[in-house]
Length: 218
Image 1 (cartoon, rainbow, N blue to C red):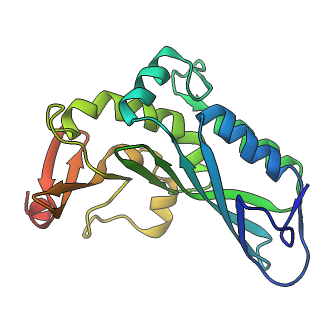
Image 2: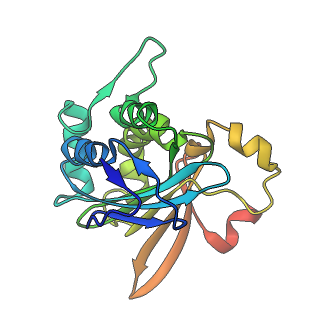
């Protein structure tokens, strides 16, 4: 059992002084490390009013993104299942549901980042359990678009943000929470261009990169 007052090098909590127990959190971390073949660090923020814990998960991997995609396609990296609706369900969702079943506190992932040797993929929550539900499909789609956002395998972005939205995109807050396809519209990419940071927007539908300052005028 982990607790919000227990010291753990892999855990960080922002909580009230009142004691709250978290059953199965160590097992959740260990399962992540086994599934992703990486080292996990977890920051948690506990909201006493809603009795909810938002988790920010950092997974550090000793290999490159392309290695990950090759093993993922071979079925030997990140346990996945393909149900009848042909969507990809990552084992992460099962682990999160099991964690919630053991506790009277509601856990969810607000952000998950995969730190590869040459790039970092940062996934943000869109709706309840969206990261856990969509992580397998996100990894699969990264593989499908790899040749496009690497500019024909010539340049790797050092950060990939999944997703990003247009500043003037007419999506209200409540609609955004229900927008399950929002992960596969636009991603934000950062490239190291002549020792300067170059921000680009990648359209998955058009398979095209846009400069951030020109994107809204396209």
